[in-house]
Image 1 (spheres, one colour):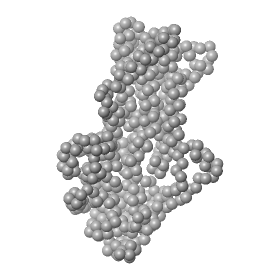
Image 2: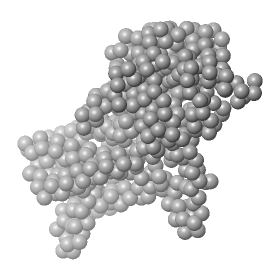
Image 3: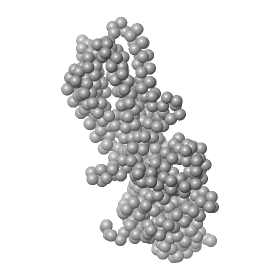
Length: 266
Length: 248
């Protein structure tokens, strides 16, 4: 344990550099640069709002805020897990030649996406500000608790990212399988339909479908704080936190056990 | 085990590779092939029971023909490979010059790469800042330092890499054919820089195909053949055996 802390301190500057590199290279050579990290969710939200408010008869109150609270969290999860999964292969030239603690690569991938995610939350602040001033949603002091699901989200993404990174070194098929799987997760996260209709549906399995998805639990609790302005669901919080911690432990153990073999497969 | 006068202790290191005739990295192939029992696991021992100890200030030349396991040994010592058997105990900071610029990113400019590669080597940001001018000057890149690395020639990359890596003040220095960097002028300069590091009493591991260079730089040597040490000791004795092997 002492060795790990010492190693982490020694390489914290490398971690910082890797995070910086991820952010810089993502927007390099685009004119708008980092501004894209909030234009992009804003534009997709506008599209989703137009599409779904014309298709679905029953409107959800302050629909853009509802979409943003789901979409921003989901797209972080999607981007971070994908980047972490590919991080070992993306950094193979480094891994083959110098010794660096390998867990830094998936960690840096999650962290730079997290920074971009935090920046993109500015959009949410802006859009919900408009709806608050129109009186369509009410800001309560529960908004401060929103930090809890946001932290939970990072732990989940890093845990899942570690597991995926380990598997994908040995089986590259994982990348394709995961791209399908995150799509399933998206539809099971109630991003652009009303979650409460599912949760209160007469067929109980519909509710369970959502509740079993830890990402939905995180999104739902985030919405409770920001959008509904009420207390988080403790059950969902316990489930999503527990799930994330288990993923993190499984990920760390699996990664540690297999990391010495990575070099023989990349 | 941890005696004070030992800088590097390599004990009974063996390294095994599985040579599968084809690389299987997807599930379908793996299932199909394991059902057909087509996955051959040809074992290949790149290193077999290699042991040696170095005291601080020793300069060890590693000799051997192509494929003898020289680079594998250096990678095991550098920590890139984990040995299948045995272990390596090292003291102090190690600077591996295995391949210069391994941590470079082609989209980054030279300047950004100094910080990136420096951090890969475990240097701090403040230290790199203070050494920045020196690095740029030594690399002779001038204004190219602000150009993305993908537009560099291989000589320019190697020069930049060498300039950064020599900023590490190592206790153990690993050199794998790196003194063949750049043009004749830069080569002379880099050899002078290496000699300067030698004078500070670093422990050196040196691989080169030029026996004359090894004889000039090292005081000890080991000779590897098919992953085994067949001779170890003072440089003169070992180089005699090496010469008789190569037939020159």
